[in-house]
Structures are given as structure tokens and as C-alpha cells.
Image 1 (spheres, rainbow, N blue to C red):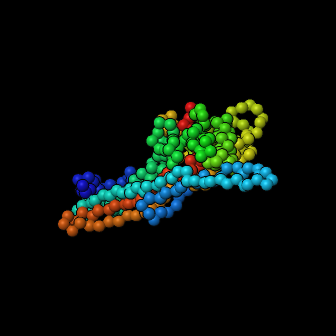
Image 2 (cartoon, rainbow, N blue to C red):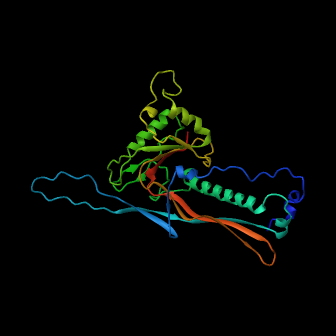
Image 3 (cartoon, helix red, strand yellow):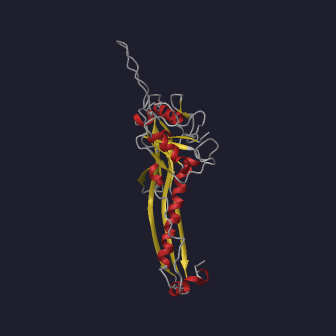
Amino acid sequence: MAISRAQMMKELLPGLNALFGLEYDSYENEHEDIYDMETSDRAFEEEVQLSGFGSAPVKSEGSAISYDTAQEVFTARYNHETVALGFSITEEAIEDNLYDSLSARYTKALARAAANTKQVKAAFPLNNGFSGGSFNSGDGVDLFSTAHPLVSGGTNANTPSTQSDLNETSLEQAVIDISAFTDQRGLKIAARPRRLIVPPELMFVATRILDTELRPGTADNDINALRTNGAIPEGYRVNHYLTDAQNDAWFVITDVPNGMKGFTRTPLSTSMDGDFDTGNVRYKCRERYSFGVSDPLGIYGSSGA
């Protein structure tokens, strides 16, 4: 249905001081704090994890060398979604509007709507990656799990065994847990935290934990080890699209390669055309992208206590 003069009667009359409601700023590109973005030229992308080899054994004098095998472990698939929205304005509404260009105003609103959808979709794996959620990693378990299976028979954990709120102790434990990550054959990997992702409700907690010189919340003169050691070198970022019911979920992005990834298939574009019979002008925006995870060790998360 086209936007007609009936929906904008005030804009057809003189004496209007201001039009508002479409000029709000948006929380844009917060997905870039979580994902490594790449471009794609296919309908979908797939990434395969390989197992590598186990520890090399001691070879006794005169004995035969041992041979190991490698294998494909699991495949992470990224299916690009098309996100699009449009609107139509009647010829008469365009002609009789006495103020700013209607098309310019609503085209900005169109871009803002598309940006909102992108951030909601980017936050979906974090909001739904815990037990009982709907987002699994390529290994078939929850994105945040204490039992990511390994070829060696062991497991990796990228969430605490007991979910905890963000505080000095829980963040220190996260750093320790991340340092204990292993590859598929059980060999330790040099994994380190990069940045903390929190909802707005935890930004002040994150500041006290990461930015104070002394331990927060104590009367001791102990140093803040997290800050002194540079345990979270890139600090924290606020994501406004996290939807945990108690607003206490928090996440740590690690330096493990090929972790949280996003693909841009078609960048955001806008276009317009006119209908010859009605004179209505139609505008639309469209983009294609996907968000997901290849290696779940690229992120650590707690749903809060």
C-alpha cells in the first residue's frame, strides 16, 4: 500500500515547524566487535575443521617410525539471507508535500530499518547459543558448551561449568579456561582473550573490573591483576542487541582464528522506480549476508548466574 496524502495531512498545510521521528541515530556496526567479516561470491560458504596430529612419540633405536592420520572433523555452513524492505509514495503526496523531500526522509528510515535487522541477526548466535537455545556450532552442540567433542576423545569448554555473573573472579576464570583450550588431538593451543562483549547493563561493571588500578570492590591495596597483566587487551565493547532476560550474559572474543565469522554476499543498496499507471514511486533497500561460527573456541560466554 502506498503512502498517500491521507497519512500525512499536516505536511500538506503551511505553518508546520518541524517533522521528527525519522532522524534518530542508530547503534550500527556493533557486529564488527564480534565477527571477522569477509566477502562471498556464492550462495553459501562452508568451512571444514581438520584434526591435525597427536603428540609425536619417542622412537626407539632401530624401531620403525610411527605414522599418524588426519581427518575432517566437522563443517560449518553459512547460508546467506536476503534482507529487503520497501515503501511506495503516491504521485500526489510527493507533489503536495510542502516540506522536505519525502523520499529522502523515508529512504533514511529504510536504511535504519535494514541496519537494525542486521544487528539483531548478528546477536542471534550469542542470544541463543546457551543450553536450551537454538544455535549450535558445527560440531553439533550448543555454541557455548562444556562438552565440545574432540577427535582425541576429550572435550573443550567455552563456558563455565557453573554460569556466573560478570565479576573479577569469573573473568579471571574465563582467562584461565581460554588458556586451557586444546586442538582436536588434545594439544594445547596458545589461545588468549581479545575483548569483552557486554550489554549496556554491565558496562559500568566492566569499567570497574578492567580500568581500575587496584582490585575493585575491596579495601585491600592489591593490584588489579586483570589490568596489570593486560588480560583483556582490547577492553570491552557494549552490544545493545543482547537479549538475555536478566541482562547479565557476557562474552569474551578470543584470538583463535576462524572463530565468529560473517559474510557479505551483497552490500546494502537502494533503488527506486515509478509505476506508469498509478504514478506511485517505489523505493527499496536490499542486502545479503550471513553470521555464524566456524571454530567455537573463537568465543567464550556465560549466561550469568
